[in-house]
Structures are given as structure tokens and as C-alpha cells.
Image 1 (spheres, rainbow, N blue to C red):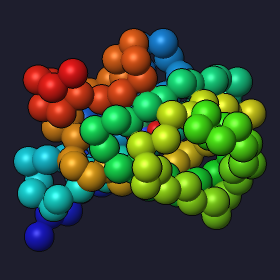
Image 2: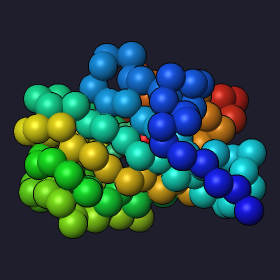
Image 3: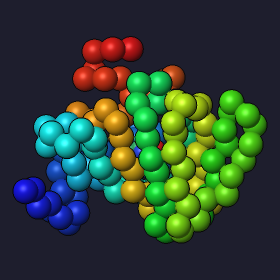
Length: 132
Ligand code: 9YT
């Protein structure tokens, strides 16, 4: 059994900040925990818009605080996000994520993130930093 606390990982390499400052991802479970997924407590900062395309990963995102929206660029649909909203990127959809105020999101990735990934210019995470 693994026990880990958010307050213990803040300020360590498990706290990853987007280079553009849009989000801060606190990575509570990563690939080397061998769970088959990674598990993050992520802050998407107020007033930001982020283009994202997880071409290698499935992601579930559950909002536990804040308000924003997701625009599905495959369909043009815009969906509001607030506490209690989950979105499931089951088809690797390209999207914009907009935060009207700071959103706290619980994110689950399959396959697991290794740890230090940030988005590439194309908006996705590579796998093990080798596959682009
Ligand atoms: C919700 C979302 O995709 N935000 C970007 C950061 C990412 N989820 C992460 O690494 O925690």
C-alpha cells in the first residue's frame, strides 16, 4: 500500500508547472507506482485557455472546485464545467480548456504519466519522452 499526501509533494519534482503558467499538476500517483494509471490533483489557473490534445493518453477529469468550460474541437460543442462535472476524453479529442476562476481538477491518465511531462507545442504528452 502506498500512502502519499498532497502537502508532502508540493515543492518536489511531483509538482509540475506548465511552462506557460496555465496549470500546476500535483502528481500523486505515477508510472513507477505500478497502478496502471496516474492520478493528479491539478489546478487550472484563473483566466487561462489551454489547447490540449492527448494523442497517446486517455484522461478522466473531475472538477472539485471552480468554474470553466471545455470546447470539443472535433464537434465545436462547448460544455460548462463546475464542481461535480467529469469529462472523459475517450476519443483523444482535441480541445480547449478555459478556466473562469481557478479550477481544481482530479485527473486520471491511462497510460500513466512518468512524472515530468508538460505539453508539447502540439498540446500532448509523449510517452516516456520518446514517442512524438
Ligand atoms: C485538465 C488538464 O488536462 N490539465 C492539464 C494538466 C494535466 N491534466 C496534468 O498533467 O495534470
